Length: 171
Image 1 (cartoon, helix red, strand yellow):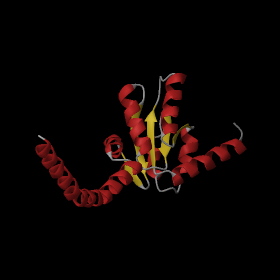
Image 2 (cartoon, rainbow, N blue to C red):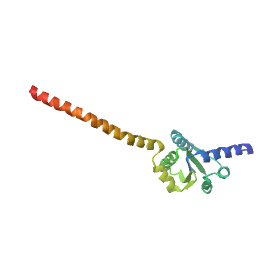
Image 3 (spheres, one colour):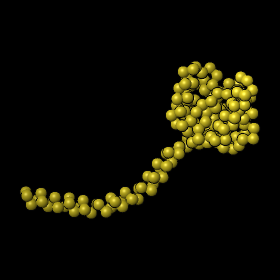
Image 4 (cartoon, rainbow, N blue to C red):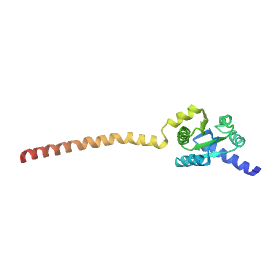
């Protein structure tokens, strides 16, 4: 890799560190190509990505970024999992780590907040952006559906009373 390519990689990594909601650093030593492809596919399905980069270049890219504390985790064979959604990459990485012992989460960063293994696990247990939106919408919609049910209930009660009277009269 020549100097121009290295500069391009450092620039790309810098963009990742600045724009990602969460970055998870993990060790992947011993993983097969198919296992790595499966991880990439899972991450892509939630809008995230997986990136393997030289630790030295990643440390250069971290210089001056909010998540600069990640530099201490970049030793050995490391991989970066990241997403704009502050929860998605952590969820996928945590789920994948449970099923693959060769994929070991070292830590990560959420903005300027450094995360250890327990921190990544805590972020992974949080509801995603879409789940939060769905919860808010259902909370807003619940009173309206209750009102509609209350308004419609007397009419259905009258209809059932009338049908009961009609059945008794016919008998």
